[in-house]
Image 1 (cartoon, rainbow, N blue to C red):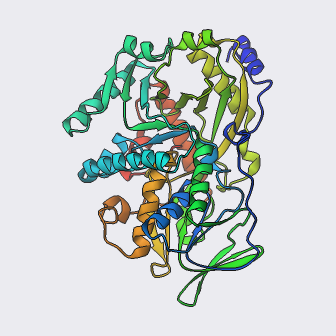
Image 2: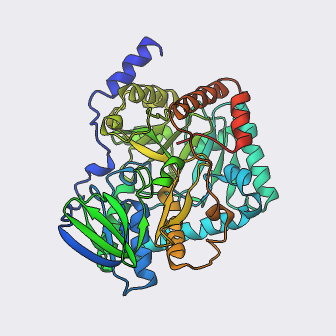
Image 3: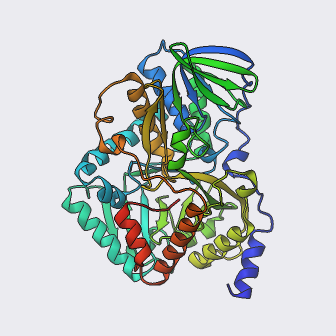
Length: 472
């Protein structure tokens, strides 16, 4: 990084607050009391992020008389659900390419079910009056290198061959820059209906309120310590109490599963983001962005960026940081060297915004698995269900995962439970130090591919053949 560029990037960060922008909202609800004493219920949901909240809400929609309790170790939405970029995608497979590589025979069905799931989220936003700045503006995959333009054309052609290109539009350089103006943009692929933008923390808080309105009992600051059989059901111990339940749904995602054999399927990856101060009218005119799409570039080490309801720009991604041993720790929530890198990249993308400052900088952990999309299962003779491994695309897919968990707990054979995606598991990550070395080599190889026209080395080709990967 040139000294001048480094200095300007550092100056832009000098007032940035080291907290997630979304969670600083003055409308944040107060915490509910912790569980103290014994509880009983039909369904216990562990985890107060999107996965758990959707599970509790859908459980009450399916059976309004069902007694549902939800436990959250901190406060609802404080982890990934309140820290992400707010991209709510229809894709259940982490994109068309990943779905085609893993479930080609099911892809049309998975795409249809993903669209239905996003439609259902939009309907829930209206039905429950979820004030979360929901905008179905779509997302543009952006090419910043010539080879990426070719790759986007290949994706479009493959989608068209499968009859899945109805909502897609290829943009050449001028058409893309008419939407959002950056000298680095060479072309794009706009998914017009398959992604919505929203305020992620407000979505979590709205779901919390909707669950309470339907009668779900929520206990915050109540970590679940262990899970054991009890009578004909299960029991979960907490610091000050115990919950006995007929069935349990685990939505703990990046945090260690209460079903220990599930833990080796995921590793925590830390992702980081910046938020700018609000743009002036002149700055908005300089970038355009009147249609308010989400954007993401097409590199292996990619950036995602979007404009907020109050005209700020969120800029995140690029570094995906894995800590030896796979621990989730508060000290990993901030990484100044990544913030500096992100700021420099931001002004490379938008040089016309030089002088703009960042108001917030933060990070958080993502549960990644080797196939990049969620996996599902049951334990304890079907009394416990789990979903995990969303790998950075869980804002929308967690609602689908909630439906899968409820189907599994009911013992029902549905279109969802018959999917190969639902019936199969990803390859597990190896133990340390192999995991740390393998992830490090993969990250190095992905960076080299970005520098060499997308050409994948022998290590990446081998990983592709084995169905393994590392992403955020």
